[in-house]
Length: 390
Image (cartoon, rainbow, N blue to C red):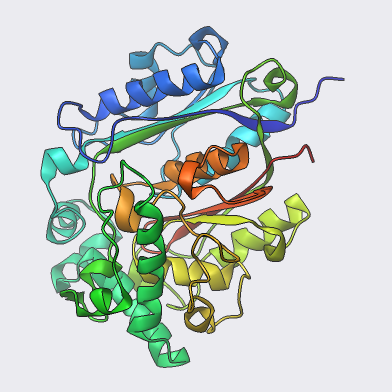
């Protein structure tokens, strides 16, 4: 009987973090070309396609991009839940592959965010644009809250309830910057200290500039297929051991508890599927839109008890050489964040399992966890990948 265990067999990145010569579609194309070259998969082999638009021109939806890329698909998915979309795609693709709805699925993403709009995206412009569109956000936008304000409220509430400090949040930014220093493509590579973070400009109290992700260009592609087909391909497969998604709200005014995200739901399910525990994970690739995002994920996924995230990250816990290296490519805080970063988490997790992390390689990496966040800590997707066949 054919082994239809889903695996990641190919990965590719477009040019990043600054690529003014590429529009959003060209980021999709370049990433796909590199993923096919990486995997040995031909376009004619691809019969499933997934895409969430990230370009400023809004023309890179799933059906438009499938046509543009010339993909003859039996299965297509245009689910859009923000930055965690690609972790949700792994869940969907794994099910489709197991059920025989398709054999080889590619997901692509591309954005020219920095080159098209500059460094202001995610603040005033986002809410002004959405205020003109019917929907629940119209009831929040007139009151002037900006995107970072949603995360600042979560950070302030965590500080209020658990005594978390700005210095503890800063430890996350420092660890990730240390990994960015090992990535020649990262947007920011100069070392930073906790003092640098807490003394950087206040953006939305208590979050400082260095608590916030960068804005960049970039794109990625991930190819998934069956374990059986992967045996004939050049790269070692990354086995999908667990994949789950959950949502607690969309608009920040509807978040029931500012200190807990849907990772508290998606995480246990992914661990159950994989048959492993947080103690087994060798590296974590988290959506680090802000330092508080990563801290909440640490707690909600069970790497430490609720309220103890601040103490957990002290002392370099998240750095290479310690027990739980975070975002070994430099993350959204220092490397790249083109608008929706979830696909980069999957790519870096796969690189680590292959032993292709270069200077940032986690020794003896057997299990990697990717956790994406979409919306305002709203939709959380958790994926556990393994080096060995389950």
